[in-house]
Amino acid sequence: MKRKCFTSFAAMLLLMLPLGCASDKIFIAGLPSIQSFDAKKYMGTWYEIARFQHSFEKDLMKVTATYTLRPDGNIDVLNAGYLISDPAVRKEAKGKARPAKGKLGYFQVSFFGPFYGDYRIISLDEKDYQYALVVSSTRDYLWILSRTPKMDKAVYDRLLKTAEEAELDTSRIFVVPQN
Image (cartoon, rainbow, N blue to C red):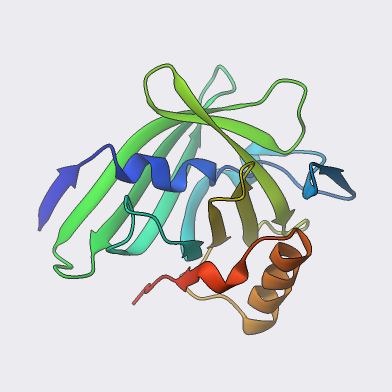
């Protein structure tokens, strides 16, 4: 199997860092976000179920994000996926994430040295951490994540409704092949 590291893919799953559970939602700039966090519960591998398409991830399938909590409280991020045109080619990007100070439900992620992206968690399975909906503060990026490669249709539909209520253009959503 061929393996390639790349930086353009890194920008893709930057926002996949929901680290907590929510009992209540707060709204900032029209986007709901998670209010409390349990980083340990969030660590591990998540599957990308759907996303807004962008050039850095356009041709990828079987996309995952794996999070590892570091002793300093920050997080190591490994994003990986396979080319749709050649499933033997795996692409990956390594990065780091940190909770945004003073902003609950927000994370700063970097794959490019000192440059960080700002992302917001707008929905998370409060009990078991089985699904998440994450967007960028610009509303240009959206990811639906699951602990398994397949998501229950009712959960998926509920996350789409949350995205619509947050005024995200759900017609842009691409369902990621995970088979």
